[in-house]
Image (cartoon, rainbow, N blue to C red; front, top):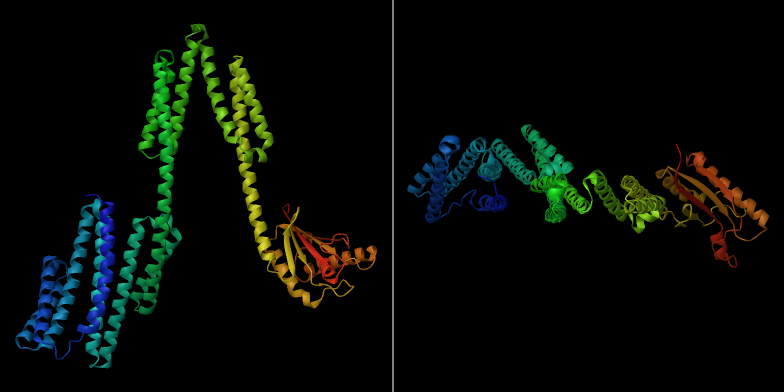
Length: 569
């Protein structure tokens, strides 16, 4: 029997419901029933005994006598004691034994169901996944029950020796660990169903490793480490499931779009084949018509096999073959048998020209034309020549020119794709440089013709001199950190001054400052010398008015130009 989607959703819902309900029951029992009140009335005690009797009966029906005999025997023993206490009107003792019988019976039921589920999985591979879900859910239920029993035992041990208390506390810790591992197992199952191992490999791997670590820690009685690892496994498994689900949904949408395109292509091919048959292509171009029919059949098979791209390609081939067959029919109706070879050449040329037309149309976009203008021009020129050759019935030449046109179109598309990818990468790098540069105090950043320009003002140098001020060195360190993050680019250090003083002295000061700046970046900050060069422009490149001090202060600056062209090896 196949596992349907509705079945799986039902199982998932059951899993969540069981975890929530058992958690609530666990709190209720441990807080209210774990240690029955001495003054519990007989009616309440009788009700608890009745509940325990029902649980034992369910365990027996589930096959616990065969698959969980010890647990069932313990449950039956506790139930017998509860009934004896009830006869003696010892309500508190009866309630306590009934509670224990109920918990042991539930464990026995869960264990029996798990064993039977494994057996069914071995016998029926089709339902193995569904059975696996049931097994994991039962494990969670059993773990919840064990935790409740452990907490109950701890409450009973409060009046016993310290050793008993310690043992009870250890039982509680182990039960909590087992519950955490069971929940992680359940979440891993959900992730498996959505192929998380394939679609969220990193998160799924982390979940698996943490789950394995949890089990190892439990084996060494490292309860705290085991719980932590199990919780991490649960978190990663949940993340993997969410990621896998999102990717599956995207794949499903894309598959539908591709399928629609292939169906449309097959429909066009079917129409072309039918029109060819009406034009007697079966008689005059039998081979081409049969090829079209066979290719169309292959396209339909590919569609059924969900090979949508191949289906679309085969359908286009069938359509072209059918169109070519029609072209052959049109020519053979007016020409003699001696022109059969020439007509084959005509069909091939027309086919090639049609393909060249499609290739040129695909490349004839503003983006491709801008990036590969020469290749696009050559493709169009070759296509025009092919059209003319076809009109002049120079079929071999038309075929050759059409092939040439397609080659140029393909080259143009490839070139545009490469240049676009390179530009996008460079723009991303430049954005990264500008974002880092914006963090440097008293500096501005902009994109220039040659690359990124970082202007550093704020009086980097001593008044009238070229020595770097101590106050500016922290900013230069930040600049050096930026340059080291992007090591593949040359740097020009440009010195600029205000208009105070002579042009000659300002030119010298700006050159000295740029040189000292370069030397500081090499000697102190460790920037390779072969990346750097310096130049002084004096007062010739102001960025503000020199009329007032505020403007002059902006003009007294160093521009660091990062040339965004990789250094040649």
